[in-house]
Image (cartoon, rainbow, N blue to C red; front, top):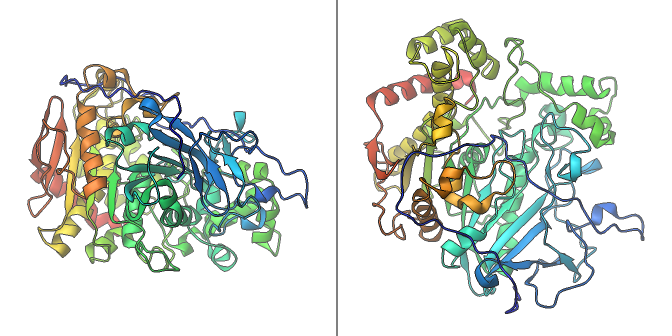
Length: 590
């Protein structure tokens, strides 16, 4: 990466006060990225619209800007951070636009029409279209053409620097890009400019997870996961041009991104062409295990898509779908009740990965239990109240049953009776109906908390107590969240991990991360930075923080709670609940 010595940067406040306590407002669950449209229209030569390689144009090169040659283009970034010490590259294309004939297929390399040409990389590209979103999306912030990657690197890094790489996979329940465009400046600065951060978009909803045997025959299943794998491959091929080490990449996901990390751990995380390992460590922040059915169980979903798009009478179903406009397909990108499930409420996550027999050979619970996963260091954990932002505001036990069956439709009446026995009516919480606490705890346990515990226990069982596996529970309270009855909600730790200034606009950090919870930020940042750099969260930890204990046979995890960081073991009650859910995992398709 060629850089200059000039530039004006943004100073990122770290908030290193030793002020700890409860937290503020978890503004919104779905973080909406402020994307930009594709610039640089090729008006000449065969109308090569699909050959556009950058989210922005090429005119007016700045000789002082950092540059990176990725073979098919030279991307020109900007200098940010304290004194311009961080090189920022936004909206770079990592795959060809997945449009027309490329729909519902694995990604391919970008075209080379711009080889040797400077392309500006100073604005985020559009994120991928989410379920039930309008199209065209206001301002072009979401689009079908969305496979863009962003890199933050020390401005003085070179191809010989070989710095560790933190690759973040955003969440959104496989139906949205919900943690898009976290800015990596703060973590690069916090690391002493000794690492890189990369994030990217991947296809979701109908565009990323349409399944059925006709997709298998004339396309690729789990296209969204294949996008993620292709982004890892892009990093392996090109990150050295930004100063990164292709042999030291740690993947970290939040929510569905964390579920994706788990799926890549059991999905042979190597490059299919070279056989080279794509990552050396994994972090699951709120590991997400929805129902992930077999292909044969999703034929009804494919048929429904044909009906919604008017392709149900076409002998070439896939050709018909590829011939539809983005607007027509987006109109079909909406949920419906699963067969056998209640008509209401609709499922939270209509499109999810499927067991395809290739990338995902079996249900993830079973694969981990059988030891069929990569032997790399891992961190897996959750917040205390994972289910509160998802659960139905149930007034009765019947409401609880309907909610669970709408999301896990193969649960029988016998199953739901057993669930209610495990989760009887609990003490009330503010602003919610009587059965909300039980519904939220049941959903949080089965979908997030117990999957993380299962993965960590599998590492210990198959690799021994010497395995490098760490767990955590994040219990830093925010007064507004508690008052709203949400406790410490889903992915509430993200702002502490990346720094509170790392997400602007809607969904930005609660005020408490700048005031009474500011002290948690350097602690969490340093644990994560340490893991990315050394594959051990304790080696470079914050000076006042304790060593992070390994999981081991005792199921010990880090507890981040108010003004105290300590260790705890899973309670007997939680172990019993997780054992219960483990028995239901096959019928829940987890």
